[in-house]
Amino acid sequence: MKLLCFHVAGQDFGVPIAAVKETIPERPLTRLGLVPPFVAGLINLRGEVVAVLDVGAMLGLGRDDRRKSRNIVILRANLLVGARDPRNAANRPGAGLLVDGLSGVRDVADGDLKPPPPTLAAEPASYLDGVIACGDPPRPLLLLAPERLLGSPQLAPYRREMR
Image (cartoon, rainbow, N blue to C red; front, side, top):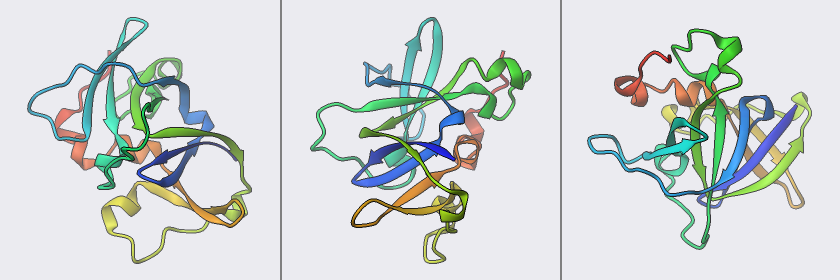
């Protein structure tokens, strides 16, 4: 399986490359009122308004303040709950994930994926498909399940059907 890998608050994460529409450098966000802190704001991406979620804030990790520039991972709209036409939605931006930096694409074997440790709190563990040991020396790479992250109960009050 191919993963797009990135850093958040000193931790290594990955998402399946098939879930990613594109990556862009961080750009100015339009902040919103009356939303939780993990909703970083909105961006205009070639005429589409896209909500950007701060992964570090959503997972309770914070951010790596040593980084001067961050990136936004744009996920495909077919991952959003309520996408009416999933085939068409795959070509549209669904949501952005604000991350501290990109680390590239990695090919991992399905057999290398281990379940999240039982000591991990239930909510963050629910957003993971598993953990993979990567690198030398080996470090844990947390495999995010983007459809579960976007389907989070934390986001339910802000969810609307896509047009």
